[in-house]
Length: 180
Image: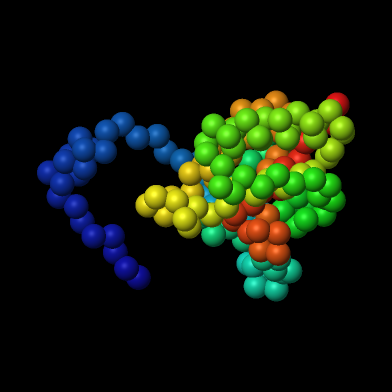
């Protein structure tokens, strides 16, 4: 039989002073706080897995790839599928304007007249050839930059993008016009 160790009266007094007033328990178990595990971002994991799957095994269309030289514009509120169809050449190009060799003022005048005629005649999709600027001073595409700016300012332009390589590539744009 084991005996309780004896505690000196000084140690007992020190313990009571440090522990403070105590209340005896009526049971011998303690309620522990329930710790829940951190939530797992399962939806994020699923979405990331789908993105990886699409990147590895999904369809690749070169028309969806941007190289940095393309012109792309879409009016706010327009569905992305419309721009995708325009980039892939799904709209029938009925008319085109070639700006090669024109000065900036001549090109602006020609573009304004061309777009006014196309809008008046109800054309939906046109091609504007501005060139790549290979023969310009400093090899900078002057007309390409100007056409990009001018088209963005016109209210009848819904979207435009650089044409596929077979139709001029980054030297031409497909333009989608709003219907009257």
